[in-house]
Image (cartoon, rainbow, N blue to C red; front, side, top):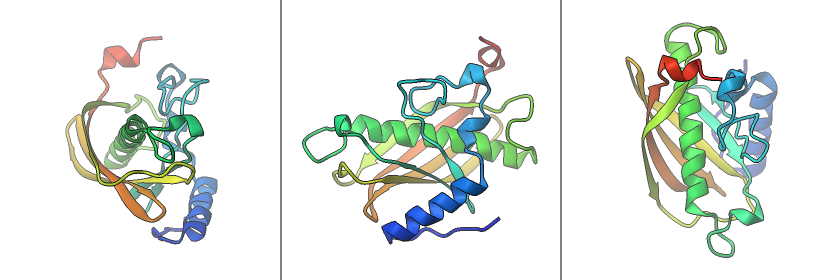
Length: 178
């Protein structure tokens, strides 16, 4: 598998992400059906954002292009969307990292699914609407059932927000709910 490096050139970055997506299945596509209804990342939520996250070397990456209705003020993205992208991308990254740490293939049983215990977002500059957004994340720590993920949201090559998510492994009783 080709390891791709982040580039500030939008066309080059879009091509590289397309290569990554063709070579890998998204983390969220491994989630069991009963855990695939999240508004941000659930593939079975017909009204959701349907974000897709992939490994890019030691980082994870997702891209999302906001719709006109994701507006805060004309021309700029609503901050809640930014928080949702960071949140869902980070919990997906936590899941993928836990599988990696255990030497398991994603999707194997029992499922390793994570929920947010803490979400911190620093909004650094207004995020423009109408351009693809990229969220890149790294795993800061894996400790038992807890994974700490740091991320940055990038638009037009500039970091617009940074986030930190403390994700905890979903309790067994929630995994079994249908």
